[in-house]
Image (cartoon, rainbow, N blue to C red; front, side, top):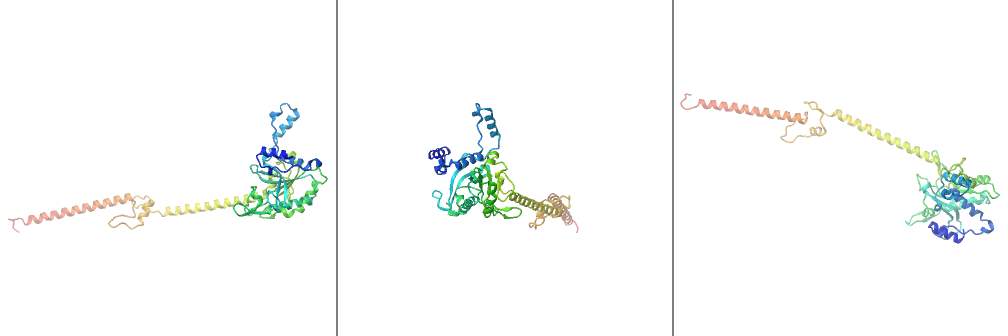
Length: 372
């Protein structure tokens, strides 16, 4: 883009001019093949949908092509999700990069579409595998660079600008890099890719883990062709992850399905073990309740099981002067105590009557005028 074009893009997108990339220097002499390939890559990834209302006067063939584009699977992100010609400084600062860094052709940030961060390199098949490998090595240097963040703690420099998946269960892979081959040069991508995989193996090769490969501090490197990308989009199985033998959609190629499946199995086993443990606790508590109920005493009078309060009361010593029967429930105890009280009253009344009768007899014997 020209300087005016960059200013216009900055105004339309509401982003700083420094994020709009750089001018197309040398476009006149080179035909701007690389900037055009970068633009085509963005369009192939974005897959914009045409407005059919604006095509009412267009030929039937154009309408059919537009309808096919509308019906095709959606792309990734919006135009604001893509930034071009972004410096990745291995030394220096964001604004003033030093030597040893690299400039990403495209940086895609579309977390809403499952792609939080993706770096894209476009090659017109003019570079050798060694030249591309050297560029990927600069990516590795940039990803490893640590700087102090606003909290005073060291963290990877790229994390101070972009968000991505944080370290999870001991694995913190670097952001993925997608290489898009536009076969207009003399070099054959089918030969370049195997050689490139061999040269960059230390950067992307995972370590064997429990049923999967761990890519801790490794770069997921993916390759595709621009022609396939235009035809199938990011959802098509046209992406080759270095180290794998089959083509995948972009999200699968970036991810680690075997690891996800293994972790899912582990989580399922953990859930099953937790459920079994809870079931064991439930059975033990149920058995304890059953044993307690079997030991619960019953009233010797009516046979009713004691409630918890009564059971607890029977284990305590009664208050002084309080009459009770620990073998009876409260109603039966009340009746028993009432009957005992009534019997005591009857006994006392009988004794009082007998005493009164004796007293009357003695008084009659010692009345005046009667002989002894």
